[in-house]
Image (cartoon, rainbow, N blue to C red; front, top):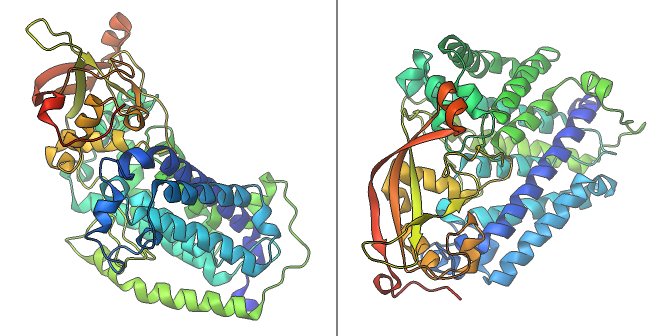
Length: 480
């Protein structure tokens, strides 16, 4: 059975399991803080309403058995505690069965949230966390020899993630093929970060270099992951560097952080040992039943990979698609098309309607608003409302199920909804009316930045939602 164990991957497994524990911690914390306002019983898209037309087979979730806001919070707190235990190393002290149970509970809890999270949880990094989290169940604690098949399944996940992202770009927007996409991307990405202005101001030649490096990594270097060490480690190191670059140039929740951690799991253990002062146990056991479970997992993943592989090879490739309700093996990809112009929704309120009404803006935590406010860093935390506002600016259809309800919550000064925001013009008081305007945003030039101190320049385009009062939305609940 020695072939099924890979002691040399011990350090890579350690780094990966601690990294995914941190991502779980962030994910459950975000669900705890944002869940009540987004999907709670009185949320923008309430889970009870969703459960009324979604059966167990379509969306397996513990919440089919019972739903209440308190039960949801309990599940989130359980996830926080268990992920903290894994992060500080307590999970590594457990017997193999205890390890499996801890990680299986984490996966089941987060799957339950994602499967009832509706549009707020429709992002590729949700399924990435679930797929990686399920594989973690079978990696074993520190005193168990890392399973060869389990570590190779991490490589297979990283390969599909990177290669799928590369293919969707080459099949999608022409600017990826003529190497000009990154002349727009840093400015028009969903949520720029503090350095995005500087990246946008790189020369056109450097933007082409950025794009070409992305293609080489995702379409060429990625095949090194399927080769033995040290080639696989070199390929993974390239991906770690590129993911680090993406981390410092944008806010993509935990997508880049988790991809980076996957890359670290593939590095040669000797390289990691040279920089991490952690002693490996002298004796590494490997129970026969656990090895058998790992083999069974590999068979299941192989069978479930048929759909994602067909999708990869298809000219009609789909991004971020799950092929089974448990989200065990998925397809990935991002930015098959890149927007050239940035538009933003600006939500305003007034304390009195009339010809002399004074309208003031709501400030969101992450998305652009005040042109003098530097884009903040939020990743790997995920601001779901801010992201969806970006999508609504692209197409109002993205807000069909919730935008009017959101405006009603603002009219009612609903405390849970206001906590999703950075500030409200009326504070905790109810405004007389709210409206939504559409602006075109662009980064300022270097000269404009020096002269005005602004990071953005914006131009009014049109009114997206005319002024609404509480009388216009009598069916919207919430408030003080």
